[in-house]
Image 1 (cartoon, rainbow, N blue to C red):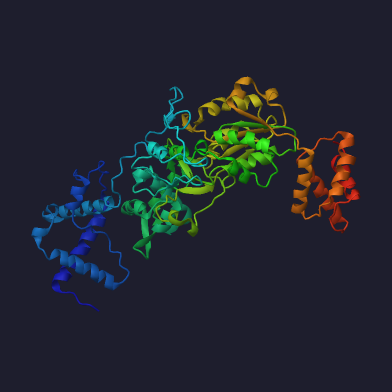
Image 2 (cartoon, rainbow, N blue to C red):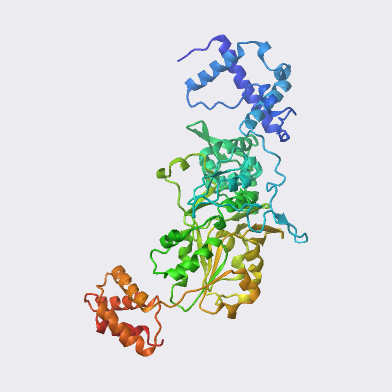
Length: 601
């Protein structure tokens, strides 16, 4: 065991005296938060830091050797004598020592957050919020593009060059432009809470609710829970400890502590719980989300013929139909798919998204004028996390508040109601859920069986007649204000009815593409039987298909439908499996399938 020299023993006593005085003084009085860019003494942060003494934080040693090493360093620093000590600690008495120790601790907290965050009077600086009595003014233009951004790329499926990113991004942006059609941007890790767009008070509330729910957790587990870097929340955790709202229950590796709530901390956490029960990832400001939608917009995707063939590779789509679908998909605007039932309108609409870039990044939650809006929905968004094969994208600089998903395809059928198009706030948890159109941004929103919804057609048209043209929408939040949000998706209306019988000309004008999905020709009908026989592992027999067409279709003028080959073959297979025979196309099996399938048709 090492022995201390007299000088080092005096330094050790001084070290622990400063620690005791600091803890006592901090528990008695916490000075107000300094102004932006200054320390608690009114000096610029850089000057205050250079004139401050070495922070007297509690030792984080796990062994006697580490304690001795810290004491030796303190004694070596004190060897220069009083002349080398900062002027702030040249006074006499306990009062000066206490004030200096308090300043040291606050400067230590400041040093973890450079640049110093501005007071969070409104964390949503520049957010598009407006009072109901005030006419709205859009923060972005109707086409979600910067003026004059008509850009041609080097290839038919290339994103606009980086000039688009330069128009939107700045030096402080948290997005990296990849110039890759499959994944246009990558969110970058913030360097401060101010850059992240959240206040220290909001982080504190989330942390305390998490600790109340879990009981105790190391600091790095807390950071992982709210998806922020540990270096950004460490000052918040330290402030909670100094305010005696949390306590150190132990220590872990990497100079970390296990945090738990005190009685006072539990009381305050319960008050935070009444405000909201949310303790997930820290939210992303609305303005950052709007920026991400502009950069990942479907209007910036320009799929060509090869992209469409790849997207519909598992469907038999005739060339003339592909020629009509191509420009409609390329526009990123709305379209009507109409025609007889069973011809694959829904199947076509569900595969349109494959023609666009494969992945986008969306925030888990969005901060909208103080309201927390949950955007990520596991039921509608398919997560696709980065893997080691993703190369340079796989690193620790990605903002973990964002999640990488496949471009969404959200389908709403007859169950669609008006409430699904507005923010849904849970009165029990005070957590808001984003509407369908917001979840479908940068993807496809399919309104299937249009005209058969629980809400009337007029209600839906009146709700969306402006967003379809202007490309932005207005949503009401809990305070009664309306906020402007992007409406950036390819909206597809699929119906068995004539569009002109459903809607008026004013709405049809805002849906620029009306595409009929026709009945298949006899040649295509026979080809579908070949494809489905291979899929269902039933031997294909051309003479059986000839019998089916001549005996059950032409005599009755029965129209061909794209769904008939699949449905009839499934009937044949089920009949054969029930009778314990090998599935095959025979006249008897086809007669049975036709009698069941077309009995009332």
